[in-house]
Length: 228
Image 1 (spheres, rainbow, N blue to C red):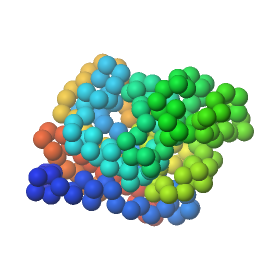
Image 2 (cartoon, one colour):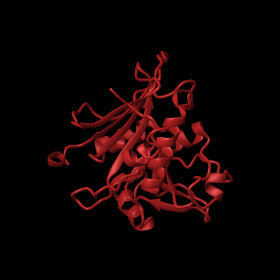
Image 3 (cartoon, rainbow, N blue to C red):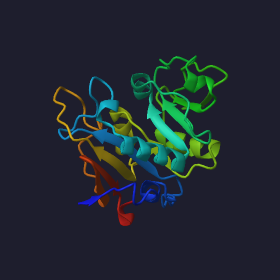
Image 4 (spheres, one colour):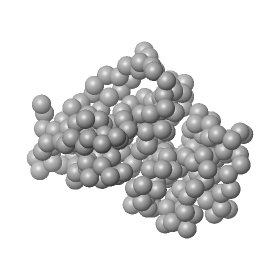
C-alpha cells in the first residue's frame, strides 16, 4: 500500500485530486461523489461526518472544491454539517432542497456563494440565486446543465452528499467518479450507506488509487470510458 508523505511530497494531494477533468462524452460536466465512511459503512457519527475525518481528509476536500469550483450538496447535509461560505471565493455551493427548509439568514446564503436547486413551488429569497424545475421535484439532469451555464469556470461537479442526493444521481446515471475516504473505526448504529434511495443496480468503477495516511485510506474510483 502506497502511503502519502506530505513532508516529502507536499504537492501530492493537489496532483491526485486537483488535476483537470475532461467533460463527460455527452458534453456535460463530470460529476464526482466525495464521501467518508467507517469500516462498517457508516457515513456519520452522531449525525455528522466530522468525527471520521482527518487533516489530510480535509485537505483532500478543500482541494476537490477548489478544482471543481462547483459543489452540489443536499439540504440535510447543509443543516447537519453547518455549512458556511467557502474559503475559496471562486467556489459556488449548489444546495438541493425539496421543501426549502433552510435558514436563509445563514452565512452561506448571505454570502452570495449559494445556488438553490429546487422545485417550482418553493419560495427562495431574492438575494439567493436559484434553479427551479418545472415540477415539484428538483430535476438534477436539467440542474447540472443550468449550473454549467451559471458557473462557467466549473471544472466538474463535486458532490458532498447526502446519501439521498447520491442515490438520485446514481439512479439518473450521473455518477462518473467517487472520491472515498475510509476511516479507521467501526461506528455501529443505524447510519445509512453512502447511497440510499436508488434501485438495485450495478455501476462498475475502476480503482485509480488507494493511498494511506496514518490509518485513513484515500481511494479514487472512476467509470471506465467505454461505459460512460
